[in-house]
Length: 455
Image (cartoon, rainbow, N blue to C red; front, side, top):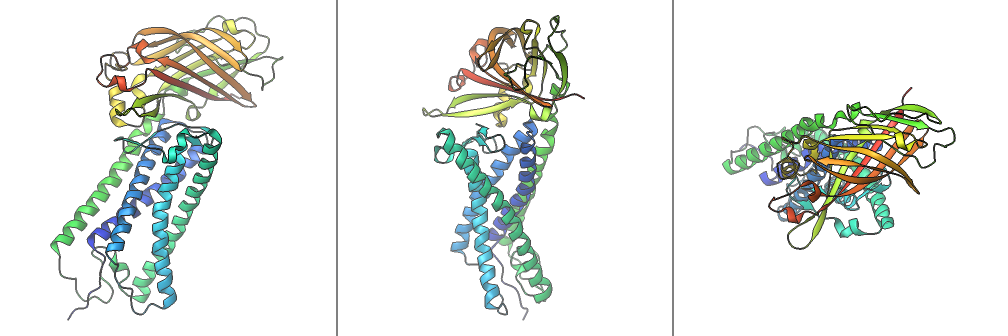
């Protein structure tokens, strides 16, 4: 009579490899995202990666809870009789540690993004989480509405825990694989065959009897895992080119006055793309040329959306392709200038269906009106910086707007930040569109331009 090894159920095997594949995909992606964020990269590529990372991470959480429930209802195969007591203890402890990691990793990540706080910039970062673009994921414990101090503390604690758990998962996974190989190659028992479909234990003389239902579940489950991994990889690769927009061709020039220190409240101005700047008056200082850092510059937007039951949620997005031309002289505001050109079909808030709607005639009408522009008409100095007054044109409709902004020059780095609130109905955004009443009329537009001094 042939001897055969006991195995996990088909459902347990599919859940095991689905969770393992997702975590293997998420770990390098997470470290890459962290490195890019540490470098100040706010590109659409990083934005897309964060949304995918969060969606897959939440999937790991749901699958891990299902796996835990299945484990409690369906005891695992018995351990080999030759295993000493200490090894059995370590094996059990390792499996339960994995459950803790599989649940703790996504939970700490969810807690971190719920705070709406960036640990890289130590500043608010209200980017909503959309589960594969299907629906918005709520913030845990209402942290996004808490005071700044609590959000900052929670964000730093959650991120530290998430980061440490990632390294713990790597270490535990390495030990887990080495132990499984040790059982198969040296102990020659059935431990590895418990979980690997189609693998025989070293002592098995023939394949176990075929179970059609088991094979169907394994085949379908493993196929879904492969398709999901392929789709996630293609999603990242296909969208990568959108991050390289015309901002790489932007220009940034500042006249640094001999009487103005670099830490004084500065101003930023931008010149029309392919349009000459206003005539320059003699300056007190010398004009410095700067190179715009596309990875650290962004034009973002945010709005509120009613879910139909009286509750509203914040949605944030950005434009992946734009150009800004800036010339600023704090002692000659009259001859300073700024111009921004935005490709409206590059707008994205992380929800695929929203991105498609924004290009349609009722919104940006990107086919007929592919760009939106802002051109300054005057500048004024304010207590905390400056304001640029100018004309904003969207869908062929021009309105006067005032953009408060600051410009800080620190050695070889210059950073301009500005935020302006616009009424979307002034530009017929959402006009005669079903459901537009669920979207706030006020849209906040935030501009960040970072540049390095040219040699």
